[in-house]
Image (cartoon, rainbow over the protein chains, first blue to last red):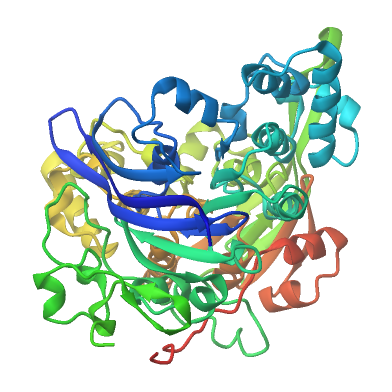
Length: 329
Length: 269
C-alpha cells in the first residue's frame, strides 16, 4: 500500500537550563496509510505530544537534537524549507490541540477563525470565503450554525470550542489530521459527542488521522492501528483489535489492568480489592540507562533486560512488541 | 452509628455582574443534603459546572454557605466564628486536583510537611521536621526526597506529598476534589490503593469528588450524582451504574468509554 506518512528513526531531545539533555523521542518509526486512523497511546512523559509537534517540525526553543526522516506524500519534512512547510501545515496536515480555550483567538468570531485559515492558504473572494466557511462549520455543527459562527470563543462551551478547532483542521481538506488529546479537557458526555464528530468526519472526508490519547478505551472501535509509546520509544504496535484485546508488552498489559473495573454483580463484594497498580515511577529521561526503560517496573523482567535494549519483535496477527519475552519467536 | 458529617439543605449562591449593571445570582449549590459515616467514602460525581467544587470548599470551611447547615461532630460549622472555623479546618482537610500548583515551589518537601505543624506554635522546628519525615513513610515516599523541591518529583510523588501534608494534622475527614484526575492511569491506581490503605489504617473518612464514574464506583461506598447544584441521585455504586434512575445519570453512564480488558494474563502467542 502506498504510504501517506513514513516516519523513520525520529529522535528529539531537549536541553534544560542547567545543560542536562533529556531525550523525548528515542528512535520512533512507523508508517501510516491514506485514510488510516492510528491511535497513539501514552502517559505523560512518553513523548506523545513531542511526536505530534515534531511531525510538523514545530519545536520549542530548547530543542537540542531533532533528527530522523518524516516522509509525507513523498516529501521529507525534515529537509523541507520554511516556505514549503508553511504550505503543508494547516493545509495538507493539520494539528488539533488539547485545550481549545488556548488554541482559539479570544477576540475573533468563530467564522473569522475559519476564514483566516482559508485566506492564509490562498482562498480569496468574499462570497467564496463566506460560503466555504458556512459549509465547514455546518459539517461540525448540525444545529445553530448561524449563532455559533457569530460567537466569540468565550461565548461557546468547551465542546463547541473543540468543534471550532476541528472545523479549522478540516478547512483546507487535509490528508492527515493529528489530534493531540482532543478530548482530555472535556466531560465524559461532551467527550462522547466529540468522538462522534470524529467518526462522522472520517466517513465524510476520509483523511488519515493520528489520534493521541492516554485512554485506551477511546480507541476501541475507532482506531485501525494502535501504537504504544513509553519513554520515547514504540514498545508495542499492531492492529487495534489485537493490541486492545490481547496486549503483549508487559507495560501495555499492566496499564490496561490498572484501570478500575466497571462494577457488575459480583463487583461490590470485590470492592475492597486493590487495583493492579504498576509499581514504581517512570524514570527521568535525562538519566542514561542501558537496557529496557520499563525494566525497573516490569513484573516479567529477566537478566537480559538490564543488559541491552529490546527492539520490536514481530508477533502473530500483525503486531509487534519490544520485549525480550518474544525474542526467540 | 452517628454520621461524621451531615449536610442539610446547603445552598451557596454567587453574585455575578449581569448586563447593564444588573446583578445576577448563580446558585452553585442548591439545597444539597447528605451524610457520611465514619470510615466510609462518599463519591460525588457530576459534570463540570455541577457545583462539586463549590460543595468541596463549603465542606472544608473555605467558603461560607448562603444557607443550610453542615454538622460535624455535633457542631454546625456554618455557624462557627472565624476562630472556630480555623480550628475545624485541622479536622477537615482538602486535597486539590493539581499537586503542581497546590505545593509551594520554593520549599523543600520537609518544609512543606512541617509547615502545618508549626502554625499552632506549640512544636519546635526540629520536632516538626522529625514528624514530617515519619509522614513520608506513611504515604510510601522515601525519606531521601525530603530535601527535594516539588518540581523534582513526579506527578504521583507530588500527589502523595499533598496527601502526606493533609494528614500531618491528623484530620478526621479528607475531601478529595478531583485528586486523581491530573495523574496518569498507572499512578491513579497507585494513589487509589494508598487511599484505601490509609482508610483502613487510620480510619479515615473521605468525600471523593470526581467525574470518573469507574473510579468513583471503585472507591465509593455510596455515589451521589450532582447536576446544576443538586444531588439528583444517590445510592450504591453498582446500583447507580447498572440501573440509573435519572436521565442525566443514564446519559453520564452511557457516555463513559468502556472496553473489557483482559484481567488475567493474556495467552502466549
